[in-house]
Amino acid sequence: MAETYDLIIIGGGPGGYNCAIRAGQLGLKVACVEKGTTLGGTCLNVGCIPSKALLHASEIYEGVSGPYADLGIKASGVSLDLEKMMASKAETVDGLTKGIAFLFKKNKVEHITGTGRIVGAGQVEVTDAKGKTTTLATKNIVIATGSEVTPLPGVEIDEERIVSSTGALSLPKVPKSMVVIGAGVIGLELGSVWRRLGAQVSVVEFLPRILPGADAEIAKQAQRQFKRQGFDFHLGMKVTGIEKLKTKLKLTMEPAKGGETQTLEAETVLVCIGRRPYTQGLGLEEVGVKTDKRGFIETDHWKTGAPGIWAIGDCTTGPMLAHKAEEEGVACAEAIVGKAAHVNYNVIPGVVYTSPEIAWVGRTEEELKEAGIAFKKGAFPFTANSRARANHETAGFVKVLADAATDEILGVHMMGPNVSEMIGEAALAMEFRAASEDIARTCHAHPTLSEALRQAAMGVEGWTMQM
Ligand code: FAD
Ligand code: NAD
Image (cartoon, rainbow, N blue to C red):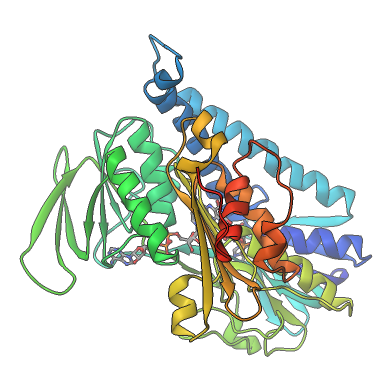
């Protein structure tokens, strides 16, 4: 057996790399085992970052070839260089993954390339690309192996014509038509990218609504916006099969409640019906780490049932979000050294980076009603916000939900321009357990989009100053 570590982390995604860096800062002898060739996990390599790069570029492309004309900007001869767009995305990913390698060095984290497997208490076996194995001894192990695409039974993802998000981030040409299966975050974000670049996009969703995690009122209004942009929605439908024809794909579907079969044809199909925990080959059963019936590792304050083994991020329960994994990574490292570690699971924002953007933090109206919590609501539309008007970006609104008795903010929901940045203010307020009046009486710069949040908060007590 080689060296002894204080901590070995398996997986170098947002959970693993943040845990490793924090552990390094706290003086632990730490190594991070990552089977991929780069650090950063799903988020940096095939998730958050490449998708946001394409969303940004495609939004500008659509803007100059359409909506910017409303602002008096006439562009002619605009054309798409998809290869360049993909190269610029790859350059961003490359720079950021290298940045993590730099942070590892700076914080004395050893980066071990290979596949990790837990072979006993305090023992991690690492197999490198050539099949050579080394067993490392450690006081603590953190499992941060993330998640993988949930397959659709009977549908084979070839990453060329039938793609997952990974294939959809690297298509070599714009398909004429695309069917997206699943109206969740990936479907709407990557569907937006390819629609903006010229594909006719249809979305097939099992449920009668889009974005099941979001506030229903927001989801309904968002669907209206997406429809206006050209998305074609087939809600309450389940896909029963995809036939691969020579030049196209023929998809059959039927109403989820039962009924007549319908067909859709497309050049490309994107399967995005969720992600599932990835713990394959880790040896969990042998060391007594329990998973729930959906395969998520069960934890209590990031501790598994097996002594010295911890788990964080997408492979555990909770929202499958990079910033949730990051919070857990930091907290877990702090818990390992005996610090008072904490993650406030009530204040984890969610963002959908479409246009308009959708963002929320805390509970939805539906969740509050179901929990029997009396609440008051204030709302404000971007049509009445002067900055949104000046920018000609008026779709959407902000909604603040506050406890009827105490006025504590329980949830904030937004759809509109730049709300991905605005939600931070709401999260901070909730972290401090602010009342809606605290936001309502905070001076916000004029003219800013964030005044819409203030006005919505004022609306809780009925003193919104509408135009
Ligand atoms: P991962 O990032 O999945 O990292 C796990 C790592 O473990 C991987 O690198 C894997 O190679 C490695 N690994 C697995 N098993 C082993 C092993 N046995 N040995 C060694 N290494 C191993 N979230 C957001 O918050 N915002 C977004 O905008 C966003 N956009 C997304 C877009 C897409 C298309 C996708 C697919 C996801 C997106 N997500 C987003 C979700 C986000 O990527 C994940 O929540 C996040 O990456 C989870 O981090 P993690 O560290 O738990 O796991
Ligand atoms: P999702 O859970 O957001 O959406 C999946 C959708 O597919 C749901 O609406 C669900 O009802 C539907 N569905 C499930 N089975 C179906 C079926 N058989 N036929 C039709 N529809 C079906 O999952 P996703 O969009 O695949 O994203 C995976 C994860 O990645 C999510 O947990 C998300 O949090 C994360 N992610 C986050 C971001 C972000 O934060 N901006 C972006 C992309 C991905």
